Amino acid sequence: MAPNPWARSGGPEAQVEWVDPTPTDPILRIPPTPPEPKSTAAAVLLNLTGVGAGYFYLRRRWQAWTATVLAVVLIVVAFATNAAANPWLWRSLAAVWLVILVLDARRIAVKHPPVANRRPVVIGVIAVVAVVGAYVGYGVLGRGAYDDGLAAQGSGDCAAATDQFKAVTGPYELTLSSDIAAANRGLDECADFTHAADSEDEAVVVQRYGQFRDDHPDSPLTPFVHDKLVETYTTWARGLRDEGKLADAIKVYRDLLSVDESFGPEVADAYLRLAKKLTSEPPVSASAAATALEAIADEFADTPSAKEVPAAFDALYAAATAPLAAGKPCQAVDVLAFFAGLTNKVAAKVAGEAKTQYPRAMLDCGLNQLRDGEATAAVGTLDRFARTFPDHGDLPQAQSARIAALVAIGTRAQVPVPAPLGTTGPITITFYNTVNSSINIKLAGSTAHEFTLPPCTTCPEFHAPGAGEAACDVPVGKPLFAVGLREGTHHVLAEFEDSGDLVKQFDASAGGFDLYCLYVERNS
Image 1 (cartoon, rainbow, N blue to C red):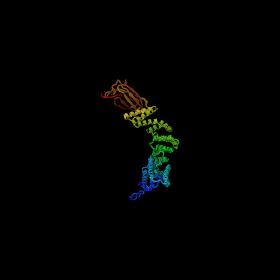
Image 2: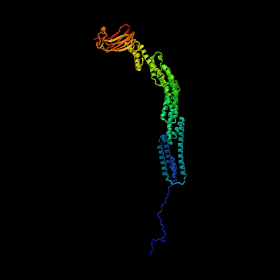
Image 3: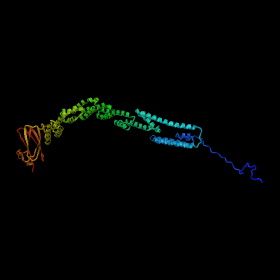
Image 4: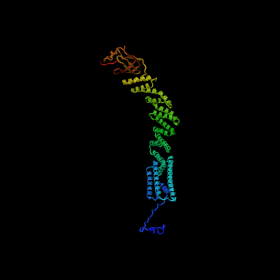
């Protein structure tokens, strides 16, 4: 059998080596440099500091410096925009910023082989602890500054308080604490407190302190505002008092009492000074002085000034009614009316005296006016007497004088004060009417009378000119009225219905005429 040309020379297990006859150049293959081992935890912790320290650790310098710059920008913007006013907004922004840094650091770090050395992690922990500790310390310092400012404000030292509060709202603003808003309130309070005392006008100072209390009711400065108000009111009121401006001083004192009631004795003294001043300076202002004395008795009864009120009222009454003793009752009428109307028990004595003197003073005033030829004024005074004292025993005298005053007005004559109404005399004169219309007659002289003659129904409405005795032929059947007069001059004012007034003067005497005829002459 012929041998197999394909058979291996060495038998079934012989190895065959194939050689490529085509020669080739060798290729040099350089494997890439493997990443430097890094700790993901360390990178995350370092970036958790907020300033991109993890990027420096990962040797990503561009990202590192960008993160640092952005962190600084955030801090600057936070200061510039008053971050404490929106603390949760900025806390949220800070949290988002840290989350971005942490996630990005982790994204980069996981591409590096892990490192067996724990040192980077320890450094990262230390860095985080240092940052947190620094922020906590920053907050503690801010809180300390606020506490110092609050303590200074509580002692009334607004200069020191302002410095501390400005530190809280300035360098320590990024604590984002509620102390920032409180410090701002403290600054406002101190500014208003300091501003209140800047004016030299006490009224302005008082107004500002009052506004402070309205605007800052819970301020630690409230006790000092109270003290300043008391000081300002006291200085102001005493200054006005010492200048003699007692009414103005009392107004200020009244405001002072609303702040501090302990000044009652001083206020009462001001009222007493005012009453004495009004009593001593003519013209006596009885109403204002009495009001001041009543205020002492009613509101300051337990003060030394209250003991002087009765004597002060006596002095006031004497001074106010002095015109009575001088024979000038008209000048005392109104003041007596005032005193008579007082109801306060402290004025009971002078009120009683006034009630006794008031009617006579008013009547004497009217009579004096009549004597002095002031008839119109006398009518007004006597009418007032009749209205005020309708049951007074001197009413007939007032009525008689009123008739005389009206006659004086109508006749333009000087009419004496007559006897009281109803008084008659021994000389009887009978008046009678000879026309068919009523006649109102006022007669004044030693006595005064007012009566009306009714129409004479059998007589004409008027007589022809020059009728004379024919018009007054006989009184029989005519309306008659007889009056008893005393000797002396008398004035007649007769008011004819639908005609003018008759003005006559006659003398009454014993044995003289006893009839007085009244009639009207007119062309038909």
